[in-house]
Every structure is written in structure tokens, then in C-alpha cells.
Image (cartoon, rainbow over all chains, first blue to last red; front, side):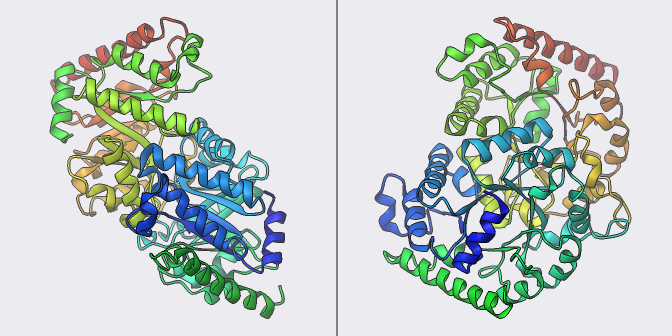
Length: 274
Length: 274
């Protein structure tokens, strides 16, 4: 998907919500466990109930790999279901991959070709030649970890390197890579005060923002510093939406939570005249 | 597997060779493509031909994920084959994972429980709480990326942070994490001159060393600075061994290459009286 198609969808739905499909079999409604593929049935119900207020779904691959081949099958069925039924939806494989060049090419093939995701998250530690193979794909995005939403973000990402913090170096240096127009960045919402700094380095890039909701980040704070004239934000919520209820009404309750966020987003966009 | 069991195996075989099972269908012998699972058949033949001169196998997950569910099945069959037939072998899932805490737990479950690998490679960028869930597993190792073997290693890993380079900070800080005795580190062989510095920080830890062979690193240089009294090194070779021939003699030729490395290793161990 092109960046413009994503922007168009956001404007149409007045939503920049991404729903994280991090499905844990110990947390989903018990009645689903009797089905042949509980993870897929759960995702399908969540997607059907929320697709009109959501612009993106983001399965985190860890939650599928934990169930081995069956989990990988659920992931494939989920992405196929989205692509077939809701082709306007922007899909993110939250995989945090990254390896030497020829190996990163295989990961890019896995997520962009075999599974047909629109984007994949990538870790920057191994540098340029570990990321460029992802960037080589047209109309696919590579979402680079910059400043993550967890406590451990302060172990290395905010270390002061010569001149500036490591995460800022990641932003700066990645802009010089080939096909860098295909980059987006992960920036955690739990550190809203960093957004102003980040926007100085990447004024227009889309930022994928986890950490709103369960992890404590504030949507309005993030928007205050992070929004651009083309929105430039995808706000992810996982547990706060998909586990809003673990009863038979789980999809309905998920919709209610997603709708709340979409309503807040629509209001912010109207206020800012975007 | 315990570290001691790995050391015992190394002493017995006089080998600290790890063979990377990075199987690319475009590079394997054509006659295997007619089989039901060419990747597994390739691995099985390589393993059967090299297990007595090798202490470890390291499939890189990218090469399996690139083939979707079929690829994941090949990975599962490969690890099961090793565990059932050669239980003394030390297995490494070269996956370079890492995510926020609850997500890293799912990855740990995937590789340590579902697939039953002895170890997994993990990227450090997200810090302590992204790595500790892996370290919590007893008799399993977490192999943290420190200084990798690719060109991009110099983009961030060697940036000077306050006091010292980033990769050294990764080594230093990771030593303070809970269950850090379960850590090993990836250190690329293409930078043998760094090993002396690294040994000052982690004098006894096992280092997984890619980059010997196709990537240009020298075994004797690495050993000169990296060997410890308990060996402390696993030297990986992938392409140089598994693609030694793409004819029907591929397994035989792979064995010849592995044997050459084992012979050199045995000689180094004898010279150093280890």
C-alpha cells in the first residue's frame, strides 16, 4: 500500500487507530477454544467488529510462533482474511526482525511476499545493510524501532552517543539509507515529551505508537507533539481493545473500545483542522 | 543443555564448530527439489554427514519463514531430528528476536518450549525487560547480539556512548541482568582485533562467532584473542560448509569442509593445551 492510500483511509474513517492482534489463548473467551482455530476465530470476530473504525491491524508474530505451526497457520489465515475482505486496511507484521543482508532479504520475502503484509517492524541494531533489503520493496513500509515503549528503552536507546542520543542517531542515520522514503518509526507513547524532539528529525514520517492504554500513554499528549498535516501517526492499542471482555460479547466490547478511541481521534483531527 | 555439557562435548569432539543451516532452495542440489520436504532432506543429509565433527547446528529462522508454513514445518522437523538422533548436539535458533516483556516471553516459549532449542539469539536494542524473559529459562542460553559481522555493525554498535562504545555497554549492562549466567554473545569474526577488548568485559562467556569463511574472518585470529580455558567459543560457518557442492555429493563435500575446520580447531586446542 502507498503512504497516500493510508492517509486517504485515515481521512475517510477519521481514525488513525491500529489494533494489535496479540492473541494469547489463556486470555480469549473460553467458548472459542472448542473451535478448530481459536486464534483465527478470535481475530476474525475482532476484525469484523472493528474494521470501520480502525485503519490498521498489527499481529505480533511472537503470539503466533508460540503455538508453532498451528500458530503460523492462524497468522496466515488472519492476514489472508484481512487482505481478501478489507483490502483498504493497512497491515503491520510486528516482527522486529533484522539480520545480515542476505538474511534480511529472506525476512522481507516472508512478510512482504509470502504473507503479503504492507509493512514490518525492524530492529536497527545491525545497521544499514540489515534494513535496506526491506526498504527495496515498492509500496511496502519498514517500521524501524526508534524509541520503544518499555522500561528497557532507557538501557541503550537513550544513551548519549557523540553528539546526540542513540535513538536520534537511529533516526538521523536511517534517513540516509537507500529508499528511506519507505521508512516509518516505532516511537512509544509512554514518552510523549520526546515527540517534539523526534519531529525535528523526522518531520513527516509516519510513527507507529504503541503504549497508549494498558501501558499508560496519553493519546492527546502524543497528538499534541506528533501529528503532522498528513496525520503521520498510527496509534496502536492491543490489550485495551481485544481483551475488553472475555465473555461471548468480546467483539462487541472490543468495538466499543475502538469506537471510543476513534471518536477521540476524530475530535482531535477536527480541532486541529487536519 | 548446561554450559558444562556443551564444554564436555567440545572436549570430546575437539571441535567448537557450529554449522549454520541457512537453506535457500535456489542453492541446494536440484535432485532434492523432487522430495516432499527439500529443506528437511537437505538438513538431514548435512547433519548425518557432519554431526561427529560439529558440536552445534544453527538454523536461521529467516530461511524457514521465507517459505511460510512449509518452511516452519521444515524447521520443526529439523530440530526434532537433531534432538531425537543426536541429543548431545547444542542447538541454536538464530532468530534475533526481542520485544517488550510479555511478548519476549512468547518468543521464549516458541523457541525453548515449542521447538525445544537449547538457545536463541536476541537483539539488545529494547533493553533489560526484553531479554530477561528469555534468561528465566533454566539450562537454556540467550545469545545476545553484541558486535555483529556485517558492515552495518559500524552504524550503531561502535558508536561512542558516554564512557565507551555501545557494544561494550551492551556487554557491561547485560551482565547486571537477572540470570545473566545464561547469556552468551554474538561477536563477528571479521573484527578479530575487538576480541581482546571484549574478553576484558566478559572473560568467561561463550561467544558465538559468525563471519569465518564466506565473510572473511580468520579462525586463528579469533582463537588467539577469544579462547578461554573452557574454550568459550562457538565458531559458525554456514555457506562455506553447506554449499561446498551443489551436486549429489553435497553432504560428502560439506563433511570435508567441516572436517577441515575441526582439524584446525583440534590443532589449536592442542597447541594451547586446552
